[in-house]
Amino acid sequence: MSQKELLNNKEMSVTLQRLACQLVENHHTFDNSVIIGLQPRGVALAERLVSILEKDYQTKQLKFGKLDITFYRDDFRRSDKVLQANTTEIQFVVEGKRVIIIDDVLYTGRSIRSALTALQSFGRPAEVELLCLIDRRFSRHLPIQPDYVGKHVDVINEEKVKVNWSHNDNNNSVILINE
Image (cartoon, rainbow, N blue to C red; front, side):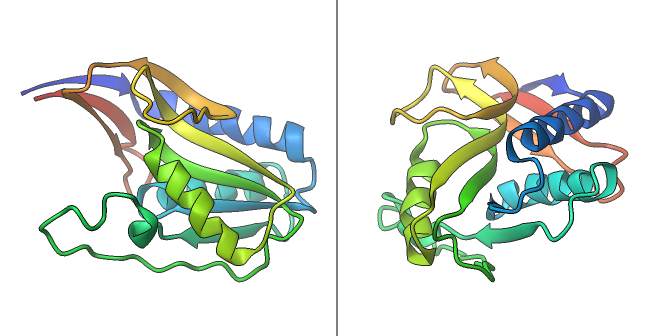
């Protein structure tokens, strides 16, 4: 098994700042916008972006939620292992809002399709955008593309992209694992 670092801690920090800046450019005060992180890995990314938006851009009263898509997936009944669901925490209605769905790695697009289905339970958004830290191009099963991307990566299906988050932000990284 070999590993290759795609983003180191400094590059991750610059990438997160750039993504936050792009969100501010398109959503300004976030008055009619909400951020929803997909459980579990998208939430870690969303929390960091929300922190940057609040601290560096003084975004006030940002609406942030966490969405679990476990039982909306098209493959959840095909697995023999017991699924562990996470909690969905959305304390607002998305009706008429501009929703930004956040996930760490976009691969086949199936998770995002599941998120769109789950999101309907909270109302009908005016618009839905997708932000991903890593876009694994050329491996889509569905016609889903991100609006905001940290880094595009061209990998083969046997390779795995792993995003590592540290609790103190000193050792964040993205690695490519060739199994």
